[in-house]
Length: 440
Ligand code: AMP
Ligand code: GLY
Image (cartoon, rainbow, N blue to C red; front, side, top):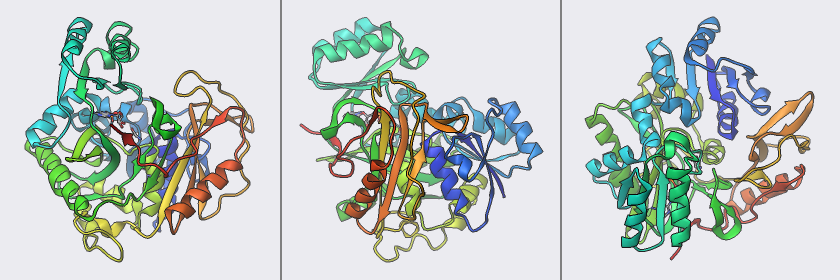
């Protein structure tokens, strides 16, 4: 099988790596990819950056399957464009991707599905948003309605912070179109959980539950980032697995079908586990980053077959037998037999100092010599300058550790990161130690 992965981040490196482990031995291409994907795939760099160019490439190389990694092309309808040309695509069309591209629409879907989420009000004018601030209790969460690279959301403890984020979105238009409408929603308290639902619109399965660490600073201090580290699986109280599946995931998928919104790909459901039960914080229409780096290594099935059957509407075939929890898997978690619950994975992100604000690029990177079975480096913001590997992003790379316990996996990830060197390397030392979330 010939497979094209669209994107250039850590998520895409993790996807390529997992595809390369398939017994089907696929031929892999990444567009544009990064120095990490180059280990297992042919990078198209520079490659086509529009649908017509991608279609022409897919024809010329007999591509069987396209996996679209990032949200922006999905929201723009790339999957629709490719499907119209007869290609099998893993990733939703524009209608499904709107769940991530338009947070107000996501709230409407949640309301019709009767799935718990924070109460909110939406505004397009700073004046009415500021007036609303007079009436509510703080903290309040203010979100750009559109996709903003993980930077559109602010949890505001003070009026000054709230006013500042309203102005950033509506007056300064820092997120362009994406921030011209905002949601102001109640702050939820609890720990967070990322749930990756793979669906072809009919059948679905849940990958290992994972937890991201979104704040830049240890003990969850400072601004939100794209994610500074993650671990999987997250151990939950035993009744929560079934509750998430039947009270959150099932009604959302049923609501998408009711609205005739086709969905073939992964729906990322971001939850806050509150004292009153799980509530939905957000949807993403693609694999989470960095969650993917820890969820995929725990997948027991053939990941290529998962993607292929999802793209072609035959996921049911892949899942046959997977509903039976084998070994240590929890009951009530659809597809739990597909996860190795007795293994653990941790990723610690190595970032450039300054991130999520402005940061330097082009700094030479030194990596450990060899990747071992229990640990490896995932490239995110790296590139090659002649033969030298250099930094080119805020989140530069991730050190992944896998082991029989969370402690072993964490140790492995940090040992690996200790062997990485570039000027300005920063990372959190408390990944997989805390239950990240918002505390009262
Ligand atoms: P989102 O992109 O909507 O997930 O928001 C990014 C992050 O902001 C989440 O992962 C949470 O850490 C935080 N967040 C979003 N909405 C809320 C909320 N209603 N209450 C508390 N924290 C929130
Ligand atoms: N880790 C959160 C995200 O992928 O948006």
